[in-house]
Image 1 (tube, rainbow, N blue to C red):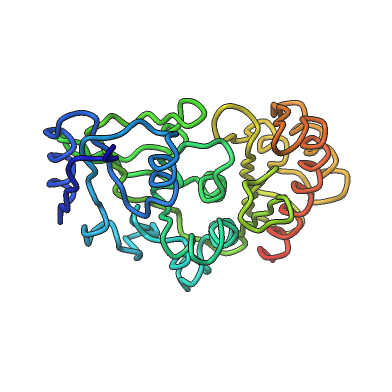
Image 2 (cartoon, helix red, strand yellow):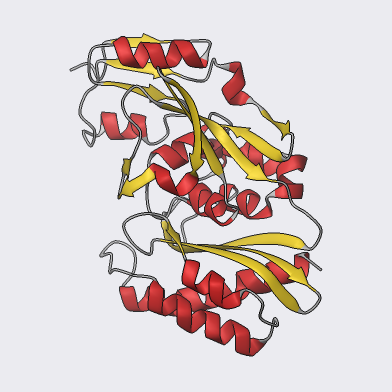
Length: 289
């Protein structure tokens, strides 16, 4: 049986949302397709009537500075992010997270928008951007809006986007003096494995004091997780082994880990997260010097 009946190639965002709104249901967007095509072929996704290819939309391929933000289009591939001097300057955690997704062939095709839209709790690019406090631009037939990235996620593999909505791109704050980020991941030996656990940290330092901090973890619940209690604890503290130990205890108290038969037990993830937190905070602290 055919996996789809129509394949459309819009050249503007408006054409794309109109195509999704008018096509017989189910209609879904496609860019890299590294998850979607496998799911369709293997029967893990119901056949669709219409695929709307977003890769021909120039606006969604942009990676540039826009006023006080770094804009990354939703169909920008992971390898382009890894190689971008702009992203390396302003969003090191995103560079590190995108550089660990799949293998080289996957990173040449898979897109940042697809990583987010798939809405998995431990999606590497998503966890990297969450600590950077990214905003998502969403387009629908009614217009466009910018929302905090975390509002995209409503459950494992479920996003808040309607059928006639698409992710246009992402806005990240520009890195300022004494700010930095880092991302770490633990996975099985094969390089293309899904993460057992990943974690990103962003911080701003003022001398020996943590002025601000942002922490993201996955999987630590049904959606990508921001550790806001741990962030609040770190704010205003002197960076020290004692402060890191307090943050580790706080993170263990607020995050929820579950056992995955294919990947790791909850207990093992609790052991890992304190190590990842120490490593990312220390790396970001040193980079912010």
